[in-house]
Length: 115
Image (cartoon, rainbow, N blue to C red; front, side):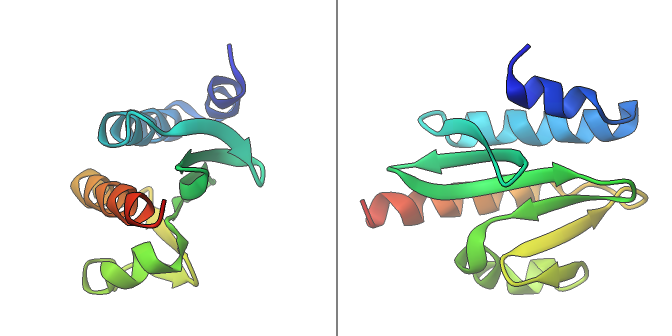
């Protein structure tokens, strides 16, 4: 079991399900991304630059797509609690997997443009 799998395994089953699904979305949308643990959470880089990070919590999933990723999708993310470059997806709401995929694809293109 690698570091990411160990990280996911420590959460309750419901949270694990969301974390595994987000991980899969990232791997499909950004197959060239390097997966690593950073800041105590799963992270991904493309072209040597941060792509996205995610983290599990008791009541939400944290998703971190740098400020530009969040700015680009401000309208879609407006219903969620946010910080600069972060958003919280509550566990008692439907998880916006399609939006997460769109954000990852945007970040891949953004990093490719700056390589």
